[in-house]
Image (cartoon, rainbow, N blue to C red):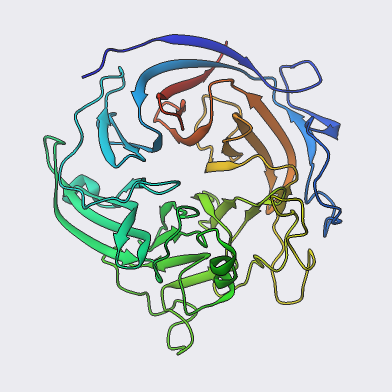
Length: 401
C-alpha cells in the first residue's frame, strides 16, 4: 500500500474575463492558437464557440500518486475505485488514496507505445454478478489489436475469475498506436467499443473498409454476441459488430443522459479533434474528410465535406488532444448536462455548453496537473481525474466556495 499524499491547488478557468456568480457568454472564443487548416466550418458554431464563463473556481486535491500511466477510473458501489495502468495492471484505490497490489487473473497485455491495459467498466448487473469489462492491447500472431474481456471480480477484490475474451479487433497490426478505446453500455445492455485505425498510412485507410474493425465503433451484447439489429448484419462485405465507421482514434465516450444516445470525442491529427454522435451505419469520413493537416504540415484530407459522410457537431483546430468525456450529472458544480472532456496536450478540463445537438459555449480550466487521461464522477458530484504520466496521480476536483 502506498502512503496517502494530499495537496490542494486552486484552479481558475483559463479565460480572459473575470469570473462571476452567473454564467456569461462572451463574443470571443477561448484563447487558443491559429488554426492549422484553412477549411471553412460547415455551419456556424461548428468550431470556436463563444467562451462561456461559469464563474467556477476549482480545488484540485491530490488523493494518490505513483501510478504508471493510469488510463481509466471507475467507482465501485462501496466507493472504492478500479484504476487501470497502461503498464498492464488493474488496481483498487480507496477514497483515502491507498493503492492495492495488482488484481490477479487478467490475460496477457501487450505494453508498447499507446498499447496496454486501457478502459474498465462495471457490468450493468455488477451488484449481483460482479462482472467487470476491460479493453487492452492483446498480443497476437502478426501483431496486436484491441480486445475486450470480462470476468468476475472476487469479493475480496484480489482477482478476476471466469475470464472470457468477448471481442477481438480484426485485423491485428504490427503498430503501436491508435487502439481506442472506451467501453460504454447503453440502456438496453449493448456494449459500445470505440476503436482506432492503428495510425499508420496503410491502416488508416481501413477506417473506410467495413470488412475490418479498424476506425470503427462496434456494438455487441454483453456476452460478445452480435445484436441482430446492428446495421451491417447479413452483409458479406462487412463485419457484423460494426456500428459506425470512418473514425480516427476514439478515446472518449458517454451516453447522453437525456437521449440515451452515444456521444464520442476523437483525436484528429494537427487540428480536427471531433465531437460526434455516431449513428447506426453512418460514415464519419476519416481519412477522406476532416479539419486538420498531417503532422509534417502536408494536407491530410481531400476536402472537409463530402456527400454521404457525416460532419462533426464540433471540432477543435488546434487540438485539445481529448482523453475521456462525460456528461456531468451531479449537482456539486453548476454544470448539469454539460460535456466535460479530459485534455491531454492541453492539460485542461474542457467544458462544453450543449443545446440539443449543438455546442453553444466552451470553457477551459488549466489545471496544471499534467496530461488528463480520464475523468469520473462520484456520487457526491465531485469529479475525479487521472493523469497520464510515469508518476500518474488521482485528483479530486470540487468547486471552491
